[in-house]
Image 1: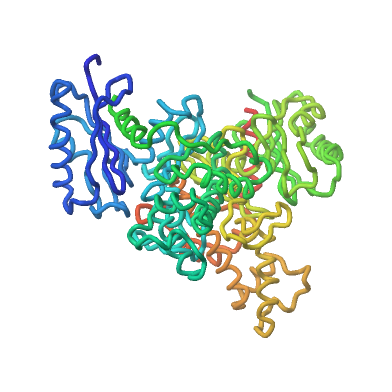
Image 2: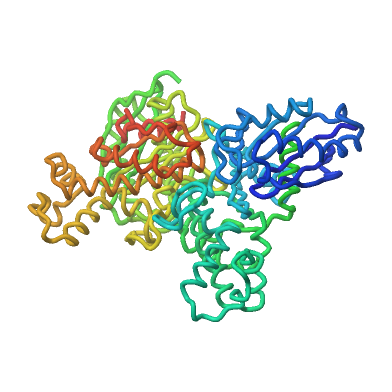
Length: 317
Length: 317
């Protein structure tokens, strides 16, 4: 196994990140391409190929690559397919692992992107010594990886762990990609934070807010964070509301699998305590006494894409 | 192990059922006592002892009993304690397994009552060949047992699987024992059905219903079932509503662990299709496409108390 490398690829809702990893779990070189600018999966794979080829040559060519591990939304570890991913452009069932193996001429394995991140966290992150934890990725969407007894929960068909799509507000906000109302993802994602901002600014037209200085396209979770840091009341209310919903959901997940910790990843975690405090408060308030003040709620120490790239690459070792 | 027997005990919210089981999983003799008529746990155990003694003598005395297995709400398999069970009279932490072992002079083990039922189902019921399923007990309360990869999920502290207390209606109905609003148990239990009946009869005072012929104490899930069978519209609406909430919750559980089947137990299942049809409809309507039309929703073939007694007794084999 000396001098051998694996490729880890993390297909996110917006960006696909990839890297060449050695057998110590070090990412030697990495890059990124947009996930949703290719109408056809073949074109996406072609761009990945063009970007990865020089990296592969840097480590001595494809002979030194033992395989490709991928994480993707709705990725299935049993079949190697991406099936009906609501946040990706390619609809239906995409035989991603097979297509990649053919293109690169090495073995390719695929799993759910959030599961890949959870594996990375378990191998190299803050849950190294835990057997029961849940990772929640708060990015464009909301992903999740569930670990019970030291193993990723994949369920009878490989699709377990879609916690972002659980319903937390009956009849609530419509999710544009799934058509479902009130799912966690429709609130506690970057997209959700933006929608909450638009809702609050529209609902209270007379309330002053720094957020009113931005065009509608500029209203992102990042802008909301910046305004909240300057003490803007509406921006702060947005994080309070997001944390409330996230915390309630986490309480439900805890009463399912009673994990030792919940690890938060992804863009929204940049908000730090602005998000963490209301989340923790709502989580504790919605737990049965037997679960209260027991579960660690922490931010990942790993960079999210690193965790996913490492976790994905771990599929082929 | 020949000629040896185990005692299985199922402590429910209302009734405690117990039996002597042989090593083929046959319940040779069984009995029951009320669960909530003893202010002190010692008195409850004393009554259990008085009722079990003749049964134990029937199989040749305590020398032939290899141990006692118990299922109880909030029962913890690691510590053998019942901790803060909202539906039982004994508050705080009850060292049930220790007290039983001392009283009977044999080993005693304790687990969550719903987990005991799930083990019984897995060993002798309709999920004998399944590795991923969830059992939901619709009784006085709502219990749950989760099986992943052929193992009961107990979590890092032994308390996993409290699905009855997950919140499905934000700000919804108050649960008298937990003080929490909108939990599954506050709707989809016998108690919940009774409350829904009272709510609907009060909310629509002019709507005719057979249910108005009963005193408030007679309004039970059983009465509602009987009236629904006679075509009473309010009674039918009660089951529609209960099924809607149960089905939404089941969809959330499926997106967590992607089980092959969900097995329903308990008193409410007597309602048959009156409950099953709206439950299935709401469940399917709230699933992502990848989960739709895949998960079997079935009633247990085992008698609920048999499953729990058998599952509990299996703890000591």
